[in-house]
Structure formats: structure tokens, C-alpha cells
Length: 530
Image 1 (spheres, one colour):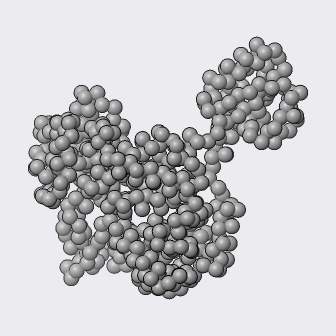
Image 2 (image 1 turned 90 degrees about the horizontal axis):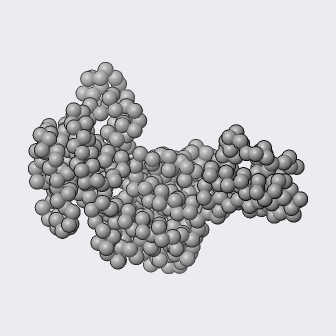
Image 3 (image 1 turned 120 degrees about the horizontal axis):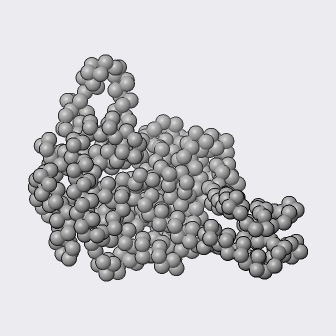
């Protein structure tokens, strides 16, 4: 289908000796897969086909290739998608060129350039070429960069290796790929407009409100995120994309932060005319999660020792060699321990036997050994991972949130996205018909700019928070899947959140992300409390 073929179910069933229902299931899977890049399958009298342009097709192929590489299935599936003989020569050429410039470029960035180039070369050899919009003004920006010759040289090195000869459109498109993935290597921070920096600060403020942690004064977050978001904006305007190999892990390990960032980033994207994917949301989530870790207090460790100050200092110095700098080690006597407030103590290390304490205790020998060091590190890791672990799916916060939604959970059959939106909007108490009409228009406008599909059959439509005075959240479970853009959903959560109530979004997003990770549990809970 990537080669412009129209395929009928019957022809595929005959070719592969399977039933039409099996083919229908496969087509449904493919449709869901390519929807990640906002690409749709179309149907006509000749059969099913991919109705997008070559750039969109190459984005899908690129995602599949990287997924297969990360999943250890490269040899089995990649030859179906591209000519594999080009990958290694292109990789060697790119690495040799960047090494000659002494650029410290991440492996993921190199992989992105290599796969993008390999897909383009392979498709070009087969007669499928990229054609860029002649009115695209981004080429002016590219040519204005003082380091554009480096980008041009990087791509020409592939030609010089006699791998492929690029057309001007292909050369320009790959220049966008290089710039969009590695902006920090080619453009100084001074090139970022002040208006964009203010938008970034507003995003940080919104996420801070959403997770109830003040990150607005984290200079590293502001600087790193501004550069990343501007790079992301260029990448999306260039119509290129990146694949985040850690997307699944980020959604699983930091679901609440991911959900809050997703919610805030949609507003940021709409204000800047962008359509962001889950891959991009996950990259931004990493920046915020790193800032959250920086904001945490030092881990306080008490060291109980009976020996003199010299011995205590020696053992303490050895412990500092293996424990992170964020750990604060305090030396106290056993006699002073009962009077010590342990509410903000994470770990006790002692050279003497102690009664049972409310925090973990590691007992070591008076002259610390290698085995003692291993025991300390093991217990410290347990403390850190336990305190950082995400809440259990049945935690009290989720229970409270579900209870609050008791009157706003609806099981009602609807057939379309528009019906679902109107049904949920009707459940709020509006001050006037004008307020409802204006808010509805903002919901529809947002969906046209970017689908609010979150994943695993969940959609989170929402409008402009400045157009609503009274917040209201309603959940619709239609009983059957309905189309939501290029995806299908069976859970619709209408987030009618007013500007003044943005700080209340964290528990809602925590619950929703738990549902995305376990939809059966979510629907069961909604059924129980309605």
C-alpha cells in the first residue's frame, strides 16, 4: 500500500490463503498503527490504499524501521520496508563526517538521521520521491544559518560515497531532518524569539500547576525546554518527525506527569500551530521529570557510631564515596537517637545493634568492609525506588477522584465524535446558551487542529479554559468504539476545566492515565460507582 497499490480484501485473502475476516483484522491493526503519524487508510471501488503524500508515508516507514530495530526484529521485517544494503554505508558516512567536526551527537540522533536518509534513499531508488511545497518559507531560515554548510556537507558526503544522488527537494527535506533533530548543534540560543520563550515559561507554569510542584524557578528546565521546544516546533513545521524509543516506558513509569504534560502541551501546540505526537510529549515529559527529581529534598541519612570522631569521620567519608551527592549524612550517638525526629530521615546506618526503627536500618562493622558498602548501596537503592514508585492503581487518591465523578459517569450509545461531544457538554450547567456555544466552538476548533486522542481508546476533548466559569468533568462510555479522527475510542472524558481550576487537573490525569494503562480496570470502576 505504500507503493500506491489498491488492495482488496478478497485479493489479499486469496493471496495469503486466509479468511476475509482475518484480513479485516489485519487492516484494522494497520490503520491503528499508521494513525500514530496522522496517516489514514482510504477506501474506494478498487480497494484499500494509503492516501497520504510521500513525506507522510516515509514518516510511517521510519517509525516502523526504528520500532523493529529497538524490538530486535530488524533482520526479519526491515527488508520488507526498505533496501537494507544502504543502512550501514549511510551510518558509516554520517559518523565519519560528524567525527571530523568533533560534534558530540547522541546515538539516537545519529539513528534518526541514518534511518530517515535510508528510507528516503530506498524509496527514491524505487521511484518514489519527495516533493516539497515551493511556497515553504522554511528554506529561508535554513539558508540563513551560519552553519548550514555543515548540514549540506553532511548530506553531500552520502552522495560522495556514491550511495545516492539527491534531488534538490530531497536534499532540502533531509536538511530539515538534520536541523529538526539536532538544532542545538547548529543554532545558538539567541536565535529563539522572545515570544517563544514566553510561551515556554507559560507551559512550565501550567505544568507546575497541574502537578502541584513549583518548577518555574528551575533555570535548567527553562533553558533546556526552550531549546527542545523550539527544535520540536521546527521539526513539526518541516513536517519531519522523531521516534521516541522510550515512549512505552515513560507512559508506564511516569503516567501522571505524562498526562499533565500532554494536556498542557496541546494548548502550547495549538497556540503555535503545531500538531504533537505522543513521541514528542514523552520527550517533554523527560525534561519535567528531571526537574521534579531536582526539586526533591536531599535524602537524609543518619550514621550511628560508638567510636571516636576520627573513626566516625573515616567511615562517613567512605560512605560519601558510594552515595549520591544529594544524600546528607549526619553523625549522631546511639543515646541521641531516641530523641531524634525521624520524619524526614530516609535511612539509618549503624555500627551497633539498634531496636526496631520506623525507617530502614543497615548495620555495618566498626571498620567498614566492601560487603558493608554493598549492603548500604542495596538498601539505599531500595529506599529511593520505593519512594519514587508510582502510586498503586487502587490508591486512595484514585478512589477519591472516582467518588467525585460519581454523578458524571454515563453509559450511553452514540455513533459519532460530534454526538459524544454534544452529549457530554449537555451535562454541564451553563450560565447561558452563548457560553455553551462559545465553549463548544473552542472544543471543535481544538479537535480540528489536533485530535485529543490519548491512547488505548481514550479521548480527552476540552476547550478554551478562559471560556468557562464553572468546571465540570464528565465521562462517557458509549459501549462501542466510535471514530475519533483516525483512531477509535470507547472512553470519552470531557475536561471542562476553568482557568482558575487548572491546579485540580493532576488527580484527574492520574486516574485517566491509570485507565489508559488498564482500561478494563477503569471501566469496571466506572460501572461500580455510577
